Amino acid sequence: MQEFRGRKKLNLTRDKVVIDFRERPREKAGNLSGQYPHVVNDYLYWQLASPSDICYAKKEESGYVKPTDNIIIKNSLASQNFRVFYDTNPNCKPDERYKAVGGYHVGKTHEVVKNCEVSKKATQIWVQDHVWPETTKGLFEDDYSHPRHANGIYVFKSSDGLDWELHHDLPILSEFTNMDADPIVGCDTMPSIFYDDNIGEYVLYVRCNIRLGVRHVLYTKSKDLVNWDKPILINKEPSFDMDHENLYYLCASRYPNSNKYIAFPPHFKNEILSPNGSNRRYYETKTLVMVSDDGINWKVIDQILDKEYNQHMRQPHVVSFREEGDEYALYVHEGYWTQSGKLVRYTVDKNELDNLVL
Image (tube, rainbow, N blue to C red; front, side, top):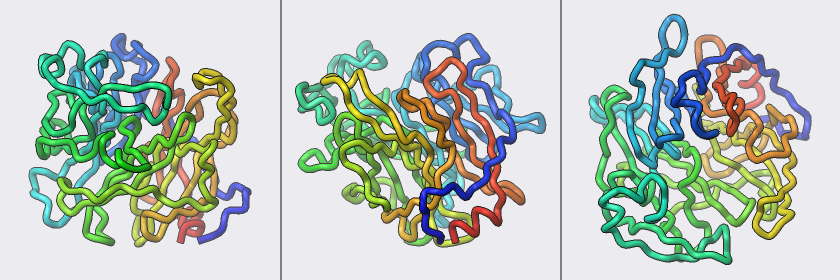
């Protein structure tokens, strides 16, 4: 593994637009439609922001095709961070090979849940907001199954990647996890999850909102997808700047044909210029290429897609990394938070990336 010295090494080729998230009238509502897309086997999944649904397209000879009715989960806050993976655990039941995590943690006033009968009757706990320290917020308790997945992150299962049900009833993580000490779990971005045969356990990476304008990544693992270790912060080299830095999510996976791990986190720094955070200066907007030997300690080895954008998460960012034939493919979301969102396939030479990583 080579040391990164601030000089780009990888050569990316922009191959083709895979899908346009704004083709249909219902897809044009809200700037978040198309949020957190990802590719698993022959399926492409993404969020339809208004309402909060999860959509899919299937790979055909002509490319990824959206069926007429392509909503697989409706009116659910799992759409905020839904992430599918194909379970390679040798003990996995054959009819549960597709798994996913998703769910948000909110209170009674959230638009998606405020008219839900369960939400109206549910109790909520008032806590200090760790991002906005001058305010408090109400959160649903996390000891029951919320029909709109509004009290934490849930695990889902499917036999075919299209028909989904809960793996078990209760959320696995919520904002109450680690509440007695930093860092606190955040449910508001795309996780990474996979079965790791290096350790014989499932590995999950989720958001940690350190404070206003600072986002980090938490690591946890589980043998059964039900009971999870206490989440811990990953380590990053060069060291993470706790005052300004953001790893928006990790986009981590096992590196093909090796015991190593690779990640492509969207990265930026920001300087807060107003008390409420509405005025900021963004800089160092790029995607990092990071490698790890254990999934916890990560080293930056390159940076890609590194054009400066002085706006929140406007830069293109990697959402899936796959080995496809004789090349590696990076699926990149371009036009995030705009009306021109699309998923684009980039490629990188196998030998080039292997020489950098291994």
